Image 1 (cartoon, one colour):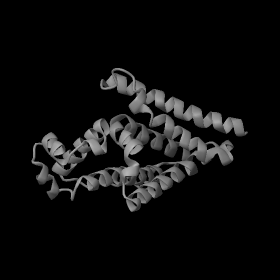
Image 2 (image 1 turned 90 degrees about the vertical axis):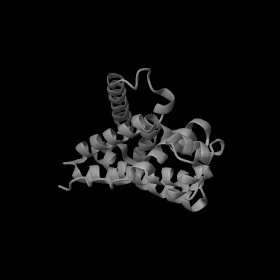
Image 3 (image 1 turned 180 degrees about the horizontal axis):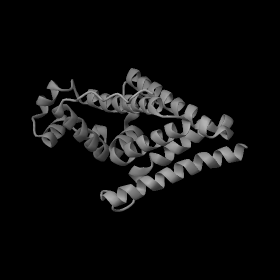
Image 4 (image 1 turned 135 degrees about the vertical axis):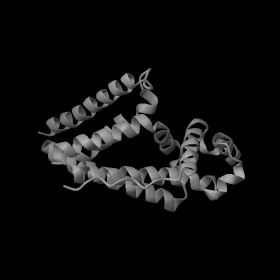
Length: 202
């Protein structure tokens, strides 16, 4: 059984810039945020950001390509480490739910700003996303054989459910109990959606 690989250690300042850029882009829109504003948010001059990123466009590409790569890499590691399809699906769900609850700014950023990426970067994001979907489709199809041809649209529907958290997160989500309750709800709904789709095809 393969063990999940540890993610590379990121430069702390670069990580801080990424977090603040994601937050500001999600709140104000990519076109509404300047380099100087991002610099102020992390306590350095706007031009100082160029030691870490060539420009604002590069920050957006780094954020959207980076999260797509991370989801795919972690998803593959979770499947490889699992003892079987059911365990793999549980692990994939846990990983994506954690992403949806903890990094909602990136979901908002993707929904609003993907079209602002240059074509090659946008194609890269789409390719990574397709691979991530196919990873889920393979596992979900094994756990719920009744899905048949509906496996792919069912997985897309589950992603839509999980990724809706920036718009539907319950009050108190910042509290550990609130986060735990929301995670449990998303887990039940996601499995229920897959089971229902499989039953409808049986």
